[in-house]
Image (cartoon, rainbow, N blue to C red):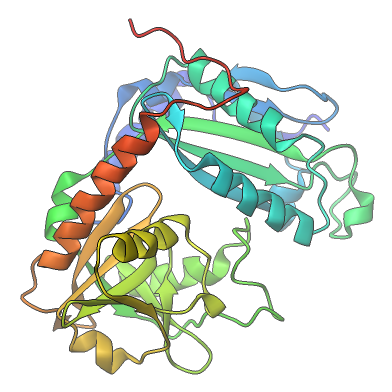
Length: 347
């Protein structure tokens, strides 16, 4: 199984980062400031036949072309933030990835506590402290030949931890993004459970393509009944007469930031509810915003060519951004928790 995919040489990695900065021509909920440090990060990998994690330089990070993730999109993943050397909401992220793996009959062959410790080992080895976005990826593992049946997998699941510095764009948080409602729908759980954070993202990718072709920044997706469900990479909210509305979770990923926003609304006396609603309520909303692990809350200024409210960040969105930022800082100030390695000393 020597055939492999590689990130290439260090120069290739640096070239890729430079190219990426040039092609980001439209706003996005995942906008961030480019960082040269990302070209030389250490990545943690557990790949068959090794049963131990190894730290490898970005340019040496390789996965076999016979890996289930590459061949079939067979796996689950999480996006996790590190700030103040603390993994934010790590227990919730572990809940979701282990639930997804269990539903796909995938034994990760590592306890959640040991996996958390391995993530910290990786970020500490990179001397990372703030504004770190981690992609934790798990695939079913290596195949002897291209074939989808899980029983043919060799060894343990492949696990990869990629920590990059990504300080989200304050400009996008202020000015917002534009959405376009696409024909691609979010499916029912008996087709592919939308609560899985799976490697098979073609449903969302095809939605994103249509929105971008229409000149919008991201896609707004409907459920099978025609009610608003979610965006292609974030969860969606609207505000009407001071009340925050969230689509139900029936046809979308159960977003951790989404739930945090609802909890904070209730704690701070902001009326909120989860319900089915049509596009008409979106077009006539006073405000709209999206949520995600990386950026927190991003205002939506336009949907399908209709200006939302004044077209600028509204007062409820701004208040929630401020509440969330303060709450976030307070949570990471409490440290890593019992049983976790101490953070490296600040240089």
